[in-house]
Length: 119
Length: 466
Image (cartoon, rainbow over all chains, first blue to last red; front, side, top):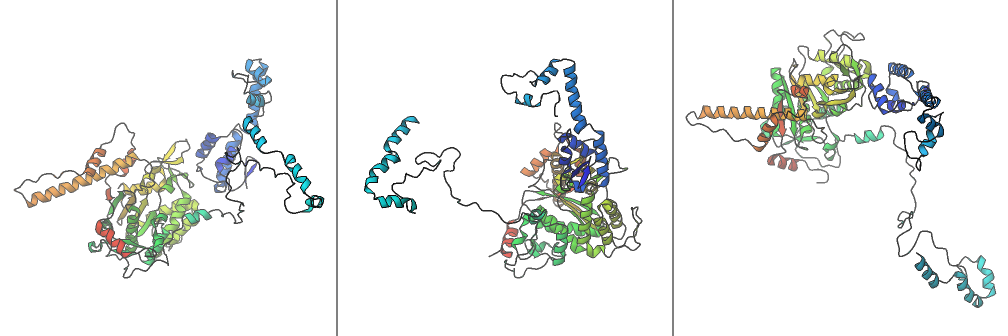
């Protein structure tokens, strides 16, 4: 087991997939991080050297991911709500924000759009 | 539908109505015994229809019409261990005890590989050479070696040509550069294997890259080498594996050679260390494998060492961008990978093997990425060779018959095709590094077996059960 940013990953897990478990890191960001530290695309956690692990942890610590990113998202919505904009109100009401019709098919908006959005 | 259901109900009276007229004929004892009887009672209501099974119509949605398999088998076998399936897939079988022994099959010798009289004959590979070839992974899974009792191969016209190239390069201490191409299944990889076998028999040092694809598809670790421009990348795991192969395959030669040069390595070396031990050191520790490979090469190219045979199969994979990414997210050109660069330096003629040797590459047609620059470079080289050959013929003819002017021979269709490819299409983006890397190489195009060769190979090696 290897610790990356306080999370334990098993040895046989792909580094790319392990990075993508963090909120805010998707395929393109994980590819960029791996290219930066010269980690090959099919590398597994067990293939990483100590230097790689230190570098990755330092890189991830400096990035806005996980709770920082979630907090930023919530702050953005709160800002819209506080200034009383249409988008802020729509967020508060749990309705679509970008001009979609509301007769049907607004499940996603109902689920996600709120002031204290999950992420 | 409603009408048919109504009709169905009329044709089949309800079970309560059917049971009523039968009841007077049955005795009371039977009626009482009925619940304890194992046999079906006539007074019992008709069995309920199975859900979904209807006769004369398609099955209801979600039900199976035909049930062939009645029981679902539970597998009790353990799942394959990690790497087990790959090992099975990559397994090389080189003998078959069920195959008949070929009477009079002789082993290949140094002479038989350069003798034109042997063309069309099948020769066996000597045991020691087979071990070395296996160590450098020269045998491929799909080549069907497991059909025969022992590894043997047909001596072709091209085998003799290659044998002579190897012999000349060794005698004259020159570097010969060759690329094998030709149609799929025309025997390029086997010819490469024969070249390797010849080199092993001559006591040369052999370095083989069995599959170029493994170098460039991004499946092994890579790291930038400091102080190199343009930045080169070392593949430490692959290099360690390569060193292990070199050590195993060339053990008989390398164990007799000791280090004579000074090397800048992260660890001190023994004074009388043999080269096979040096390889093993690199194979054991991937972190120092690349410096050790460089040290080994420095030793092998020192004066008085044996010639070197370098081979690579699947050339197209190293003539394009690799799957590795540089820190700035740009794909790394295959020629910037240190091992590939090492091979390409010799293939292009930028570096020479000081003790002589052969650098040979084969193009694979069954697993080949599209590389227009490689196609162009090979076509240009072939046209150049054809022109040179025609020029020699005309010159010879002019010498023989000075009085009679000789007409230029017409081009064959292939030559015409090649000539048209000779000029680069300006609207296609070309890879200059590839064209430069193949500048001046000899191209040997294989065109299948001749009639005599095919007949002899069929007569000599009966497969299993013949």
